[in-house]
Length: 399
Image 1 (spheres, helix red, strand yellow):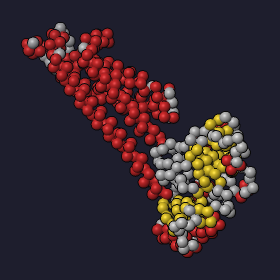
Image 2: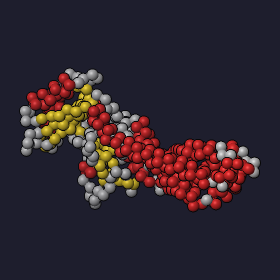
Image 3: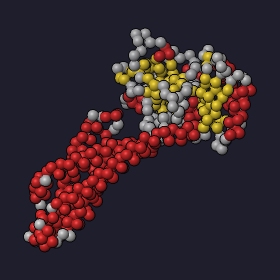
Image 4: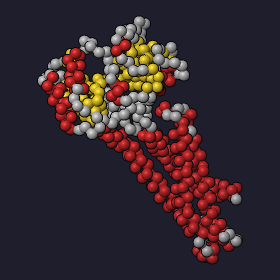
């Protein structure tokens, strides 16, 4: 039976080549959409690695043309931390979670190169404010005031890329191109390792990260300071207003903006979802058009093969046998298209494209193949039933 189907397909190779092409491109579209959706879903289900609930971010700005001494900034932060409802306050860099601001670099250790790594500045209270989970070592603190190297805490994925399965705490790494005589502040001493974090959005994968210690009581003058504040559950607008008044009360030339980190997360989520939803809608419309095209082509093929169908019925073929013959032909044609698409899709995990692991690609290949077979079977079912209902006398009389 299978050999007979191949013969029938070969006899109509020109028409079937067009069907194979349609199925091939349908598979490719479903594969691409599947990879995006599977990767996005897996990222969404992965823990963030920190607790963004009850965390606010403050952006404190000096007056126009002015800068804020670090000692005066620390005084402001002490007043904010003393407010009822404030649990802890942490000074950090501008790339706080879920905002459109990044700071990244590459590092090396004994010939091993890190991927592009997010770099955060953090003070001694950052761990408490963000509730990161320490896997090894500890967070930096006052004991590092006299360190000859820059104390840092790194994420688990950065640890894996630089140190593998060996110990990381106490090791010193540098920038990728540190020069012949790197400065002490460009040599990073690992104090601890935390879980992987996803600070970009709900749908982004975890990225290697490093937190540099902000040295207290330095002589830096800031134009803008970014502060993370962990508050008690249930706090809202009243406390935000108190914080703004407190900053203005300590130094009337400074202004502050208070934002809820969870609101930033929801806002970033909307921006991230737009391209994913758009790609899914385009893929859906394309598949619908392909399905309609397949249905029309099959319907036309049956009308062109009425004499063949009538002859087969006159020779004793049953209506069910005719229906299964047409359905079988389409399944074989679909197999050709899916096989070609699978060969193309298999190159992505083999080449490690887009730095994704293999399993999203493999799941997308399986899902795309199943969807194509299902669509083809649904499109072929009604035309095959139409072919099964053709009476031999009517078909041969028309010829």
